[in-house]
Amino acid sequence: MRAAGNQHLIFERSFQAVLEIRWQKTAKTSERFFTSARDQYSTLTGTKLTLKKTPAAVKEALTEFDMQCCGVDKVGIVLVLLLHRPSGTQIMVQLHAVDDRDKLWSTLASISCPDLEKEEVTWKIQDFQVDIPPAYRLTRFTMEAGLSALYFENSSSQLQICRMAPADLRLHASSLEDIFSTLLGLPSREAMFYEDGGRLVYKRTPSILQQIGLRLRRQKPFIAAAFWHNQQANRLQGVFQHTIHPTSADVHSSICASYEIIPI
Image 1 (cartoon, one colour):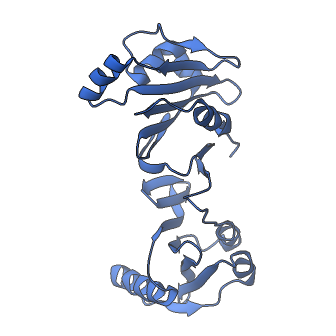
Image 2 (cartoon, rainbow, N blue to C red; image 1 turned 30 degrees about the vertical axis):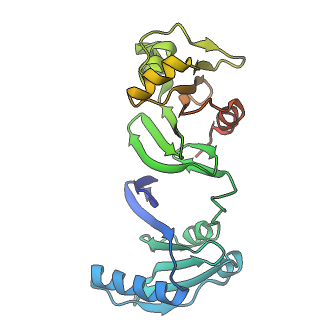
Image 3 (cartoon, rainbow, N blue to C red; image 1 turned 90 degrees about the vertical axis):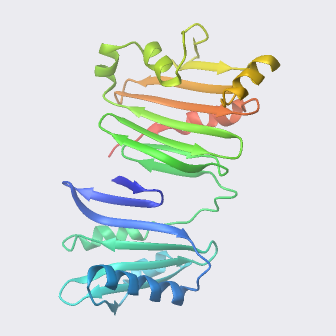
């Protein structure tokens, strides 16, 4: 899977797109959304769409959604349109693979739209997952060879989730402390310490005068950061939180605890 943009994911197999999904909030009714999405797809692709029957298993699994399936003669369903009634979220799913429909349908049946104002959101990217507090929104991301990072913001803080691989090659070239200090832009390693469990931690709680100086340089004064070596998965993992006000140890610890490598 790769992130093609905010609210735009492309699932691939052997570097070929299998499924593409985009979503956003809308004030449109389902019929207005369905009509405009079909027209847009037909205009961009030059393909005439016809309505297709929605698989019963998918329809039963997605009872909170209005749904419409569209297809092309001799190809089958190529576009699935969903409107989540409680949240007003519209979802467009394009099916690229025609030889593995059952797996694609089972994937679609698992779609959900959490209440982003109240619930933590579990982000699953590549081989890792992490629970992010509801106030944060994704602002940008990096998906490069050996380095993945998600950047979130809310009204007063920034949050970065970092994954580096393979860890053994990284640590052969530099120590865990050096990598950590480079990622944070620290001039020295003096303020770092190890917590139980092997996490390398850095916390900045500046004085009032130091806060003023940092704010004048347009930096968020408070930092809570953790970085660790997941030896079993051969990954380096990091959670970096920069805030205007003193950081919540519980929030940062909760994010770190939820951040795990998952088998793929």
